[in-house]
Image 1 (cartoon, rainbow, N blue to C red):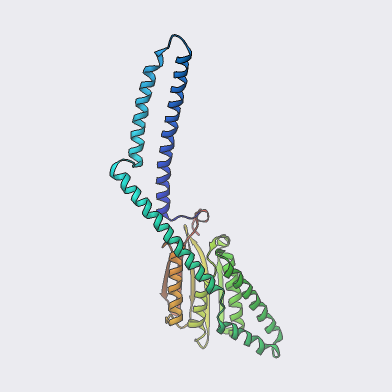
Image 2 (image 1 turned 60 degrees about the vertical axis):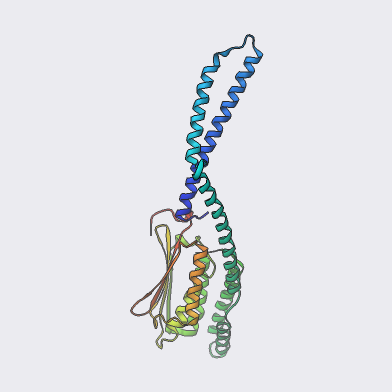
Length: 303
């Protein structure tokens, strides 16, 4: 299970405290068991043998010292205990709140994912119809890509978790459709580190950014341009870069809301550990999304 650095430190500290408590309890149980055996031996034999009294007394004092050390370290004495319990209750409330927010965001995203924009749907079908007579092979190819895109979108709309490979497939089908419509005005490249293919990724996380780049950056440009989507590992993080050499970033209502929703979604999904930034380039714009990798996927050298 993925944890942030702060969560991991808290988890490791709690684990050390639990281990210390477990060690003390095992020590105490062993002491009680040995005492019980010695008492039984003394009761069953005559005359009683007090030879174990001194060692057991010494052991009892050592156990008491062990208990004091453990309980003081764990923090169950005085003000430290109160503060720790208060923090524990507050953390539980925060976890419940975050869980509710995450469920709400996921429900909203599933609703958005299930809705294909009418503008895109109607334009694609109109293009297919217009190509049937003059270019039937091109119309067939466009329809095939459209069906593949719809299938991938439907699967994403029903899933709460996807993978990098699934997102890349969705982007390829989407851009193949746009390529048929724009022709030579659109050139694109999707470059994904193969090691990242099985990495978990929220469904349709990158597709809205790519759509914004096409709609606001490349389509308005008479000669079109080039779009590059690159996903690479950077240590224990993944950097997704969506770059175009189009008209530049002019946040319209749709683009601004889309990026705002992306930031909100990332903040909930990755507990504030993900970052989004926009870089103006000459020409064009790049959107960079920096996401922490799950612990099991974050091992190894940086790419």
